Image 1 (cartoon, rainbow, N blue to C red):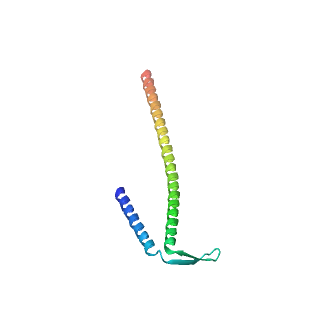
Image 2: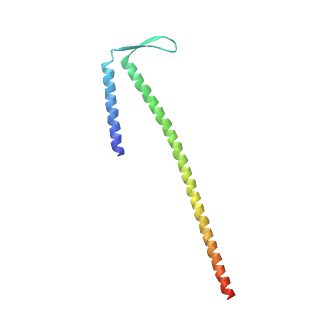
Length: 120
């Protein structure tokens, strides 16, 4: 299942990349003018350059968001591992206490039986 999803994601990536390259090729002669909000200057850029800038900005933001998500997931996994380990240790401690109590009960039962046999 993972392999099929990986192949589908790779295929989709190739299709989108080809569509973007076609868009850039077709629109390389068009220019886009915009006004910068910060300094109120008017700039003119080729549409293909604008598309490439948007794609690289998207790639960088996607990479950063995946790293942040990966970091959060790693923290959650380590917290889960610590919790599981502490539960395991507690379970082992409880089993050891139960065995010690069973041994004490057996000792007391043996002492009670010997005391009852001595009284007869």
